[in-house]
Length: 416
Image (cartoon, rainbow, N blue to C red):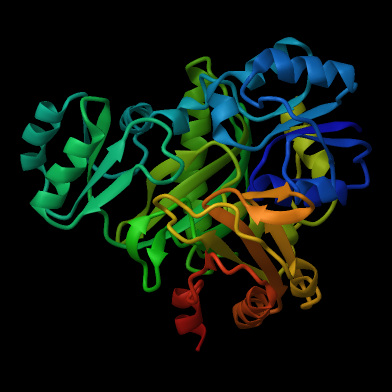
């Protein structure tokens, strides 16, 4: 089949890499892509958030399956336009993408459906948010309501931090939440209508600094699976969180179709929903793709068409992704720094280096974004995956780059 993949980040590089290995994959086109994605796909420079441009390209290239990588095109309604044009599409409608596009929408759905999550209040102004703070103990969580690329959340450890986060958010919609104690894990499920099946688990590291310190980022690394999400807890999360969400969306006339990523807090009372994403995560997607076996393109087409899907086949190996970011990230990253040594890094067994914020300038690969490379390694254990990933990081010559050295530290401590 001919496949069109939308996006230009590390997640899309991993998706392109995995799709290209599928026996059913014929032509693979990426829009707009990046230099890494160009290794696996033909890159076409269109705006992935422009529904008319996406549909026109899909028709021109006789596309059989559209795979939408990032959240922005989903919220912009690209999946709706493609389905209206008769194109099989992996990714939810704009109405269903509100599960990520609006934190308040998701919290209200949880309240109606009895889905376990943190207590919350919605606010639409600084004054109403400040007055609502008295309902919560400290620490407290402040979330911007809309898309924020993984950086719109503040875990305020003092009242002053909470007030500062509210003032920073301004008079737009926001959610104030109870702070949940526990360990975080991510669960990815394939969903079509009221049917949902677990795909894989992962655990990521949002904070920029080692020991999970500093400001939130889009993610500095991840590993899969997340053993802390035991089979029993995964089954409970599917039963109590993911499946009721799928039913609620279908009953509301806005059925979900695609991958639903549940960010979970594993509390003493069981899994609770922190938030939903409506696409493969980044860097979780890079960690998950090497574990998926079989015909991945055919699996996504089955979800897009609402066909029966069996339990996905996953490798028992562990994978780890270490992000190399540009100095200054998550603030203003340095751009234009030369990147060398990817070929040498990929000579480490089990390693693939996915490209996120890169560009070609005069024949030289350079940094063009905050998160630049996603160094991903596969191993028989988390220790082996960690050792391979960091050996590959050491092989890369990127003077402006930095990475955390403790990705997977919780699980490594448990297995020491």
